[in-house]
Length: 481
Ligand SMILES: [Zn+2]
Ligand SMILES: [Zn+2]
Image (cartoon, rainbow, N blue to C red):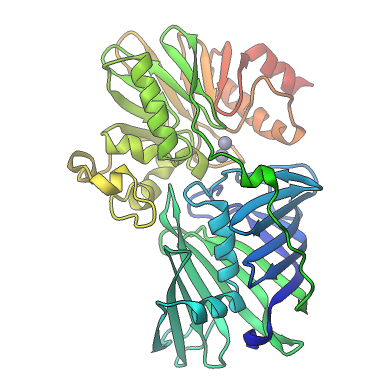
């Protein structure tokens, strides 16, 4: 491979990028974007890297979620000295949480260096716990990797104190597969894997020209292809500047979980305070929470606020709008205390098999994995109320209706929530009230309008799970403009 003579590298190419955690359907892959410019410099000794990825929708279909955007979007990600930040021009930006809600961006980006062929070899040589096995590859078809019948060596070590990194060296002494696992609120220990093929020599160094990335285990879920770069050029040992660490990044306090609630109707509260909101609805003997976003920390804060606003009533139902990671990552906390999860019927299988699996999550165990509460973990079938037509939660006086959404490009398995007496509609990711309408959101807003009409819903107020509350009048005005 030539690793001993390699201190730094600069690669460039083109390819595609998959939006992890934002699939259109659960048996489909991550939604893709075209990467029309890609470059990355890595300083192996400093464990520093800068990646510039310029993406656009290109010819890929406008389905799924993530960051819908108009035109080109340049993403610059840096890691240096154990800190991670993004750049927009000269502006330093703290990386958003996104789907990487269980692992720090700094860890993830350092792993992304350790998963490169030469980064892996250097770290394996320096590791004090590396072990190896020699094994034949029996399978004939192996995703373009070693042919059946050949011997490979798999080397395994611990990186950054806790992550298992495994690399496969084939019978031509080339690294063809490097794998690790990162904690994720939905997947648990989530597979993060690089596959390397079509090696070429650049100044005496062997380097793959196809870099194919997986995030998410194909055994658990078909969605796993997260990036592929076709390398056009490799510069060996370029001068890499010291990226330093911007002061605002080094001194930034850890992200806090804030809760800020506001009564939007009698017995109905919007619980905001972060990027994703929940809605509390009080019934006679119980309460219902709409949406358990992000992660367990968010859920614990929202559950505490629910107990403050409505003391002494159990959270019998938690309604989940859709399966995207940022909207489903907090569900397990409710499950661990016995709530029913009301979601689109199409999400049931994935939730039973993956998200609600009660077993070990070794990298970041949550309550469900740690305490394995018998009353919830042993319930089969799982306490999921699948919605494929109108589903009603009622105590005889108040009513909350859950409706599946039809024709939605964001995801096929979405529900909206309607309070008919209060004339409130709750939605996620289709309409954001109280902020300027971005043109790329109009198709989703029109889909929401069509569903309101199809279902004959009487709506006066929109409570939106990413933004503000607003009137139906404003909504109709926005889609008419
Ligand atoms: Zn979404
Ligand atoms: Zn969202």
